[in-house]
Length: 306
Ligand code: NAP
Image (tube, rainbow, N blue to C red; front, top):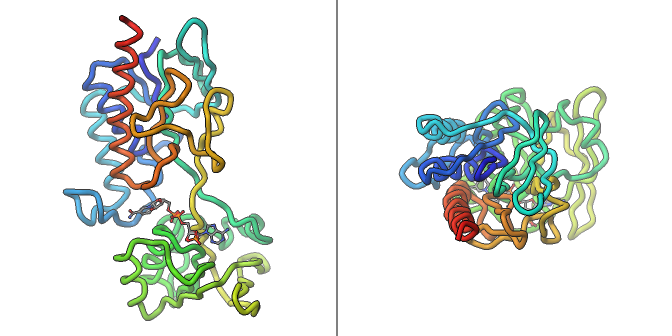
């Protein structure tokens, strides 16, 4: 019986592993992918993590994992499929490999890319449609691409792609970007990035590969066909919270309802990082959650003993 099963090995899960080990808890961290680090692995550069300005996202993920490995934190490569509450106490986490029993569960599954749900998106996925500029950008060297979205990820993707692409369209549904001011200034200064304001993507067309993006200006109603070789979708994230549907409470978007102490209303379940309802989703807030969650778990276990 573990004290805690940490589900997920992004910044929140890895921070929790480190804090759990240092607190003397019997903890195991489940990682679904061969590489720890979560979404940050696909970030070209992280410029707002204190003390490590400009570090590559991949390098930051590797550093987090090395820190956990140096402390001999326990990891298992497995996907959690369900969490079942046991009586009189504890939980069973059903994974792709085995069933794991624990007194508490820390949900740190993060989030996945949201989809546009327009015709052609699914059909051309991997054939010009991508959700990861740092993973796939190199295939579009010298070509024309479009990035859809107006948040940090969309703007970072447009900046990243502009370094290799002939031209990048940044397509945003409003007349104001959501991304951080520093990113907005950077993208607006790039001569090979054209921002199409108030514009939505309606359809992706092509033969074997993406060739055309059909867009519409939502203010004028004008429709246009843009010739592109690639479409990068960066319209936000969807929390990976499904496995807790039997035992936890969510908001309307699927984020787990937990405050700064990371405790859910179901005693013994905690949530950290992007899967939790919160205002600011960044690496620094995810690692803070990991630390807070383990502190709450320690308190919870202590209270159960008394
Ligand atoms: P986000 O901040 O939620 O932005 C999503 C963008 O996509 C918004 O501009 C939104 O438009 C647009 N959008 C949503 N649905 C759409 C649709 N159906 N059609 C067209 N556009 C749509 O998501 P994100 O950029 O993926 O970032 C996720 C989280 O990670 C955020 O909290 C972000 O701050 C954080 N992050 C931080 C950093 C950093 O600190 N350097 C880097 C990357 C990510 P509206 O603006 O109109 O809503």
